[in-house]
Amino acid sequence: MEQVECFPWEYSLGKPSNTLKGWVCSYSGYREEVGQPVCRLEIPKERVILILGFSGRLHISSVGSRLVPSRYKAFIVGLGENPLLAEHNGAQHGIEIELLPWVIDRLFGRAATELTQEVVHLDDLWGNYAHLLVEQLSEMSSWEERFSLVDRVLLEKFALSNRIIRPEIQWAWNQLEHHKGCIPIRQLAERVGWSDRHFAKCFREQIGITPKAAARLIRFNHAHRVLKSSGHYPLSEIAAICGYSDQSHFTREFHSFSQCSPAVYQNAQFVDLLGTPGDIIKPEARSILFKT
Image 1 (tube, rainbow, N blue to C red):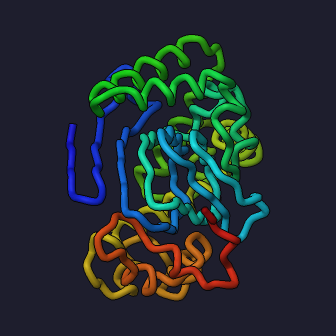
Image 2 (cartoon, rainbow, N blue to C red):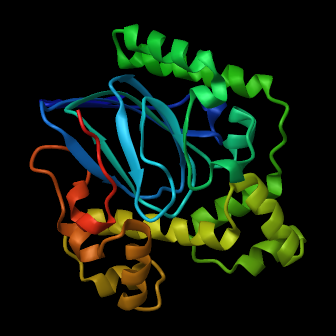
Image 3 (cartoon, rainbow, N blue to C red):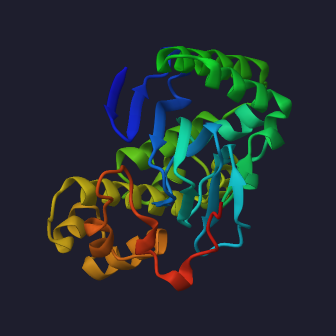
């Protein structure tokens, strides 16, 4: 378990048990106390995100969608293409869990399409159990204890579910990730022996989005990682590395998923906090944010 402490924040990275391999990607524990409101831009990810917040609530609004701004404590973020603005009043404490997209049906008993472009309160899915889980986690004294409890809860939830995940769809998603979104969709359909239409239908049912949308999302996330880790590579080089036809194509796609240009995003940073400041989004694109 990796842990970093640097006032005013604490961050701990945990590894799910091997039994959860193929379902759960990572656990991240966080604590932040800054004494003033913080607004972050959260880009769409190629993972379903489960947040278990222990204190306070996040005010979340979506840029470019009809999602109604609301306050959340424990919640799920489905796959989508719209960035979120997440704001708190100066303090937050909880766990972020990254899940592979096909777990939605088995873990939450919902069709993946129901959570696409959505942020959903966990108690809408797990009832009072969600509240009891968060309460128990908040009372524990170490991240190791908390990650161990999350392991047990997820294992129990998976064991109780009889939902079936098609191996062809898992294989196709893994291929998209292996090729960083740069593989013809028709080639995937041919490899599993399905027609293009049947493949797209089954993929959307279990992932929540079409194969083409998944390829765009995965490619964007690869480009985002390159952008953040490359210092100041020319955008034309990043575009070429990530499989975009040219810099203009890369810029259009990046703006579609983040509502800002890659150049603006590359230079945006907090002085002493993690994440990307929400104020890089143009004011007219922002929703009414958290008010104390």
